[in-house]
Length: 282
Length: 316
Image 1 (tube, rainbow over the protein chains, first blue to last red):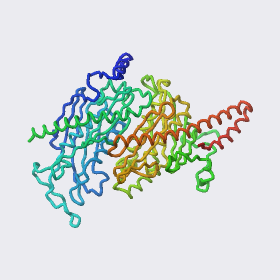
Image 2 (cartoon, rainbow over the protein chains, first blue to last red):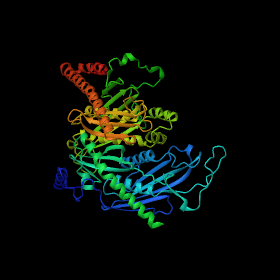
Image 3 (cartoon, chains in turn yellow, cyan):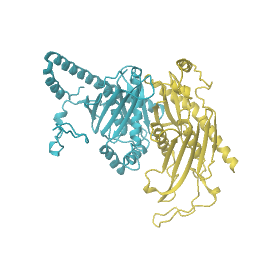
Image 4 (cartoon, rainbow over the protein chains, first blue to last red):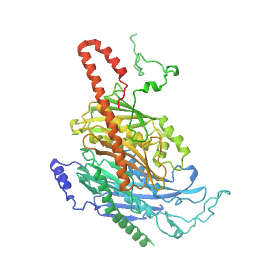
């Protein structure tokens, strides 16, 4: 999108103020309103669809397949497809590699293990249908919801196949299935979420809109784990604005406190969406 | 002979065929003038930096430190076709030569449980002809770290292309990236592109042992388990601000982040001192060459050659 010099100067000045004014009137830690559905793909183990008020839309499907664990380099495969962007572009690679690293690190060790030989492999396919602003936020939120709604069938065959080979057999009853990463106490696992923050002067803004991205100095990408910690990958990314110089180190600390104040609310809101949907289905 | 062979790209007329008997092994004597610095009380790292190593590029730099060997070449600013742009476009392409990936992949067999997914996907992708995830991530990091240092507005409708070749690397990818950032910035200086500052970067590995955290700068140590691996780029001279940041690992709290930044800032400052010394000595050499050319006319050509031979020095 192109902006006139007058528009740029107006946006930049109002965002640089000590108490900044965002073009859509949000506070600096506020996400845009979004609409989400989970578990809407009948053929996937888990799925989610997220739409934002600016017309962004992302659908994520999670499928599990039984594999021999020894022959797989990774038990999680993330494929991100952004409409109109080449698959080997840096945005797509950054998105998929960041999510892959973080999800892999946060998933409980034995969450996908079936037997000594067999294991589930998760295929997470994210499709960003439209993305006026940076696709990172919307994809991360949709992936969170999809993983939260992912259910794996219950194994009925023996788990010990170290000596005698045995092909895993599952319970036909889908009501017996368990949520991904669910432990003995039926506590659900929560994947991490990632937030892009736009830097304008000394201010930071979560979930920047196109206008804010255009006048930003840079973007800071950081993750938030369900137990309330900032997690890596943390990166400075390009949001398409003019890079007029580096960032002060205080901005990195500011990003920490901004995440602290916004991420728990976002996770709470997302969990509410997930619970609602599972209630309506059953 | 009048008929020239136009179908093949022939090498230069004075090319010599490669044979192992031509290879002269580098011994420590040749590296005598290599500076020993950047130690930060732990590992003395020798750094060898030289710019202008590629003749047909606008600018280039060679960086060597331990196992890390890489070349950054800059082409441009050159005109772009199509739409008018008010500022220069920077594009970075990274290539990791198979020999350096090999050292990563052999290592992954030894420590398959603790290898990072980044490294793994890099190895998987290196088998295909497409550039790997790691290469893409390095390219985008260098792009983000270098771009703020260039006066892009001075080069409308042009592009600056950086091509980075990682000839050899240690096991830690972040230390390679830090070296690559510095080398790229040096190559831009060599190309005569207007810069606000030279970007230098530092990399550090934070390992969480039994309730005490340690910091390692060794380019041969890879992150294990919950370790945090970081590379941060700075414009050290003007304002010490951060132009590029990439932290990998799991949880990083604010204190650890502060320590990571302190360590890398110190490293990039030290590196900046070396770069400064090197730039000054190269300028002095260029001046001498120019003066000799003025004084002795064609005789300066010979002088230039001699100077280039002596060029291989490094300063502390």
